[in-house]
Amino acid sequence: MGYKINGGEIGIFGDETYLVLTQFQADRNLKIDGKCTADTWRHLTEATWKLGDRLLYLRKPMLRGDDVAKLQITLSNLGFSSGKIDGIFGPQTLEAVVDFQQNQHINNDGIVGPNTLRALNRVSRPDTSQVTCIDNLKEFIEFKSKIRSIPNFKIGIGDMGGSDVLVHLLNKKLGAFNLNTDVLMGLNERGIVTQANNSNYDLCIFFQYDELIYSFNVYHYKGFSYESMPGLGLGNLIAEKLSALNLCTESGNSLGCSFPILRETRMPTLLIELGTPIIKPANSYLIVDSVFSAIAEYISAK
Image (tube, rainbow, N blue to C red; front, side, top):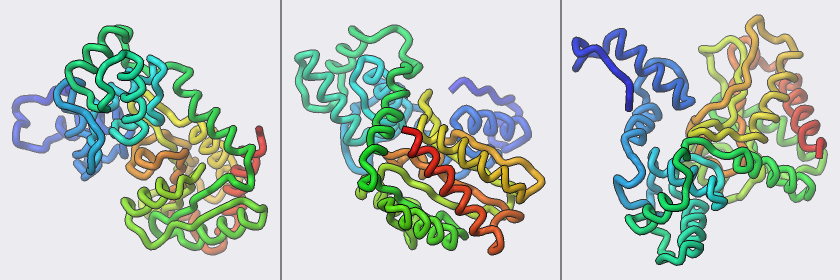
């Protein structure tokens, strides 16, 4: 993977290993804590796969890895969009593969094997490491087109821990303005992702309390040379509104990350992480009003 560790630390988690791990986490848009969590380990495993190492196809559980991300980027740059570049071989990736195979007049079985790889190598550019500007704009254009169909525009609102009051307040606030909303609660992260995708929401907003931070973070999806433009735009606006409340001494952030809740939901998704000084009962209405104001402003800017 290109990360070098001093031979003296083989079998030992020392300072150099810690630094290399944090660099890997930064490169993969993960939480930079120097801990080999389940999510970090998953990304370490996925990073070992290169396109051509194995057959790629739709199955359960879905195949994940850098080889899938490279496939998605290559297809997208050829005009066969697989949706969000997330390194997960899902239904949209299958559709893009089949479309490509039909275009190249090869067996359209949706399986990426030697014949499909040869066809990809024959027609793709030498450098397929980056997503084209058109591909990055696709999600943004589709999101804006859905906004025009309010009140059919669907928003999922969920609690990732310690913030259920905010969820219910925001749901009530959005509902009062004829926005179609659902509350996702009482589920683990996998259950929330599954429900969100099955419900085909146009936008998801999640709150989370973290006692270890002293400000706030607003996260949107960023990974594999791809960044959610609706997530970035709305995330920046929410961060701006929350900062204006002056509820904490430290400044908040709007960040692109590849947390599972952001990576695995198919729609633009935001995770609003609130620290100890902010998430107090007295601040609940202020926080919700700011988030609502940002959502209303963003979706009204058609």
